[in-house]
Length: 162
Image 1 (cartoon, rainbow, N blue to C red):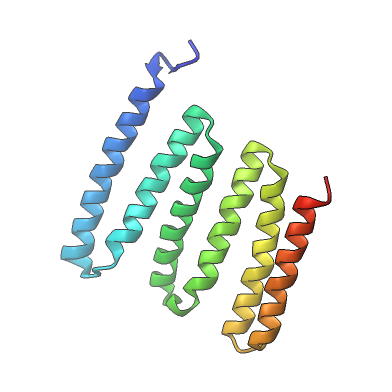
Image 2 (image 1 turned 90 degrees about the vertical axis):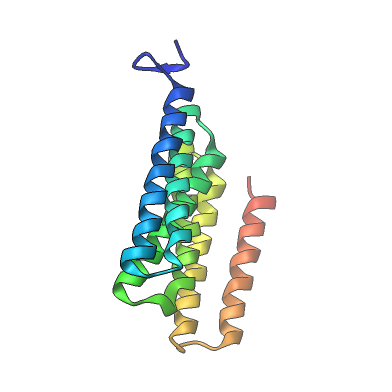
């Protein structure tokens, strides 16, 4: 049957994934509150575990929107932990743009959507511009010009070039 994997229904696997991710979220939240004493960590753990659940949903039922949102939440939570461990929290906005870019790239790779590739590469240019702006290597006008150029090129690609 198409609705089964190893004779287990896909909805049963999805329910099991939900239960496991909720339990892992509760355990990690308790650890972050009681042991680590970081009171913001619960949200990013929530992002990670919901992202994992959405990725499982995406792979079971072939939903590209769940894939994109799952990768996005997974990268948002993962990059926060990365920034927290390496004390890079002032560069977290750059990592957020990179999270969107990577989510677009992986969705494009899995579901063969060309527009997601273009969006991914456009967001890479925006993240490089944001990083240069945050390092005071370019002015706000040059940063806005980079964003404007990226948006115009993306719109031209979407509307005019088939």
